[in-house]
Image (cartoon, rainbow, N blue to C red; front, side, top):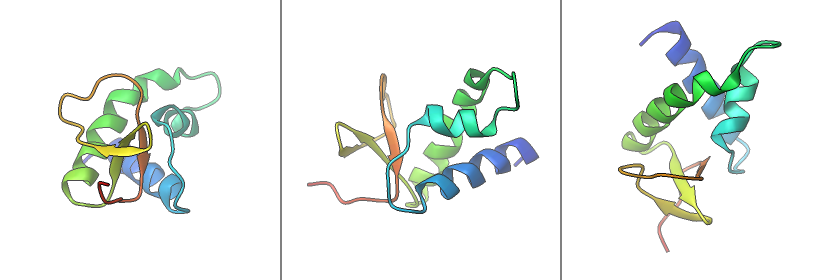
Length: 85
């Protein structure tokens, strides 16, 4: 894992630690430096979030319900692991 990937993973974990869900955009903006394009972080955020999901440490949410990241397109949020209803 590269230093950037570790920074991405650490930021995701930090932002979901309080139990609230977070948009990938929020994570990207926290990682981006002043004047830097935050969008370039989105693919890495998705990859690290998927790794955390596979390890059981994170949930992907769509309309407040847990979903699999496999084939997921569109708007989603990240949160601590939640059980499917």
